[in-house]
Length: 219
Image (cartoon, rainbow, N blue to C red; front, side, top):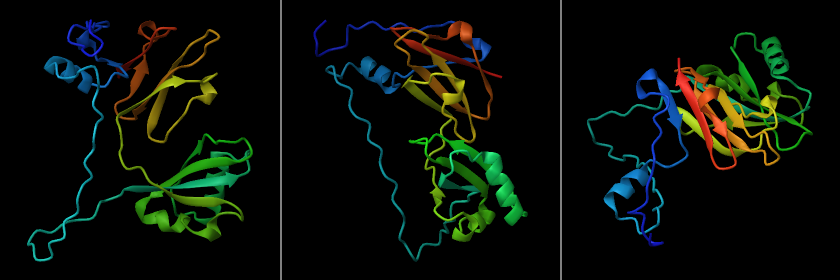
């Protein structure tokens, strides 16, 4: 096969478990490569995806009316707290000073073990109450936590989790992982949105020296 062509390349698609049982096989292979393979216009290279930035209208005399983006929930990134601090500690502290708010708090992985970081979310109309310096202790840093895109599935290939407690967790998502047990370590992890819920299918999942497969079944 010429090095600059993939026209003669052979690809196999797994069909286990059957397609109609609600299972989903997630692959790290970009879907657009399949379309390029069919077109035959690749020359051995995968073009880089380009995302076009949205433009904002400026017409002041238009009869059309735009509306602002509606946020049902907003969050703060809170860091530089004592490493022994827990999510329950933050919820209890905010409940004592701001009993009228409903808080969801998740501890985030920190780069260093000398401090703790958290994702603190509240209803959008209550966000200004926690986005105040007099709410947080001296030396603590905080800023709005923005997420531009919400994905149904997030894949994390080549992970290095040593145990279940090291697995990355994100608010609003369920975490699943498959690790290698040999000395090479590493594995694959997937985060899925809470709706629909999924279950890991260990009999169809594997992390070998040659490939990593994580199979989830929607419940």
